[in-house]
Length: 102
Image (cartoon, rainbow, N blue to C red):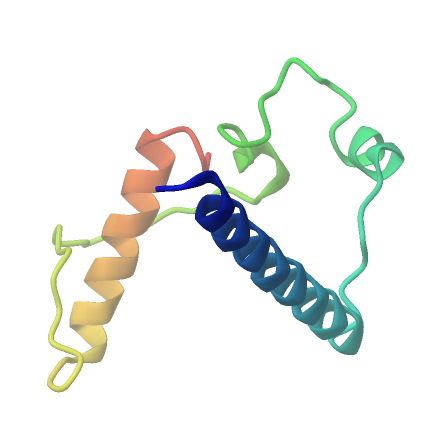
C-alpha cells in the first residue's frame, strides 16, 4: 500500500476514533458517570499489591449458594427461573474459583 494511501487511511481512522471518544465522553456526562482519578483509586484500593483486575472480591460481600446444578446454557426464548438461578449459581462459583469473588 503506498504511503500516501496508508496515511490517508490512518488519518480517517484516527478521526473516526476521535469522534467515537467524543461521543462516549458526551454520553458519560449525560449519565453523570464520574471520572476517577488516581487519588480515588488510592482511596478505594489502598493496598497496591492487590491487582484490581484479578482481585475485586474483597470489595464485595460473600456469596453463598445451595442446591445449584452446574449449568452454563439456556435458551432465551424458553427458560425457567430455576434454570436461570442455576446459571447464576454456576457463574458465582466460577467467579469465586477464579478469585474474583470470595
